Image (cartoon, rainbow, N blue to C red; front, side, top):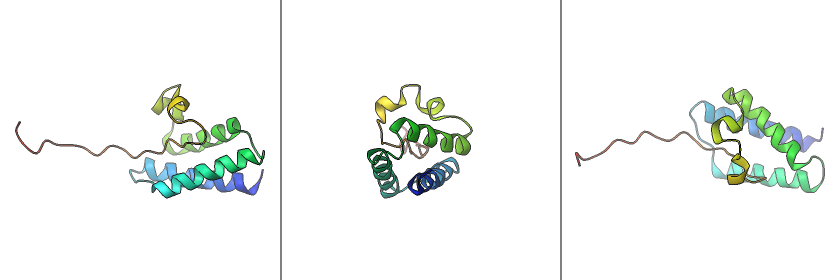
Length: 99
């Protein structure tokens, strides 16, 4: 395995663990990781399919289920490679007026 792939696993793990713990992920962190994913695929160190599988494994460790369980079987239609589905939980919204 290439060092870049190890770095990707570390970044995915940090992102997904933060999200699973109720935290957030800065957009720059996600975007840089997506760029690294694209570079790894372009340099042919791993295919996009292999990278998505490795990312999903990191997601499963953090959330206890795969990405498809949270985003649907066709999640890659909305998040095509190299996009990472790293979204924080929605904040509760309470009406501020009785209307």
